[in-house]
Length: 273
Ligand SMILES: Cc1cc2nc3c(=O)[nH]c(=O)nc-3n(C[C@H](O)[C@H](O)[C@H](O)COP(=O)(O)OP(=O)(O)OC[C@H]3O[C@@H](n4cnc5c(N)ncnc54)[C@H](O)[C@@H]3O)c2cc1C
Ligand code: FES
Image (cartoon, rainbow, N blue to C red; front, side, top):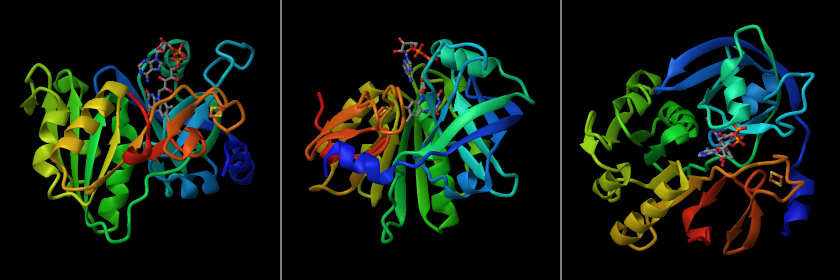
């Protein structure tokens, strides 16, 4: 199916105003922002999906375009969505400045989520930086479904790691830091080989250099094409709804939009580097 046909068949508008009800520090200089959301948006949010947040004053035009954030938590009881935000530029810095009581203009949840096969019992997740967000939600859902999860995370130092309290107790949490202040000293990808025989599926989200190393490590250590690997890519998403083609990634099946057909892709499908 070509990009435009897929776009027309899957796009539906989901815009809402969400009031910020809680802001908490997490992972060094990042925060968790929790805002109210319609029942349907909370109920339908799946791990790996994202929301597009207008990140400017209502009277301003800059930045013009929404900014994408993975769903970190969907709380059906409280009717809220939570995103993890770290400041990179203008939009994220604006979002980080917003206080409780502010209304956010949100679109979503959007995109294709991670797919856990029914027969999968053991999930290995590999997180780098803000990539911790969608994998936290995936780990929570998998534990709820009675599966086993080992969650690997890497950061420069202990302060940059997701606090263990953010994960369900049943998750095995293994960390790596570049300065050796917590866990393995070095890259998170160094510890992947020890878990490849155990895992039925691998799920990853992080910066592009981490993906490249992860791919090399997995190709070197896995048996055949198992376990298979899904990765959520962090591409700039000008529209988030499949209209601008500004986020396309090259796959074995042609060009695919990261916002509608992704952000989750099979690693073996992606053509890169
Ligand atoms: C599907 C998806 C999910 C995402 N989930 C999260 C999330 O959960 N939490 C989160 O904090 N961010 C997340 N991001 C990244 C977030 O969307 C960007 O940080 C944000 O759009 C930056 O907007 P800005 O206006 O602050 O920066 P801009 O002004 O647009 O960019 C400023 C500078 O920062 C660079 N930059 C922007 N984003 C990144 C990045 N992620 N890594 C490194 N450099 C960057 C740009 O290239 C530019 O040089 C996600 C992105 C995608 C595509
Ligand atoms: S097509 Fe516009 S962001 Fe994906």
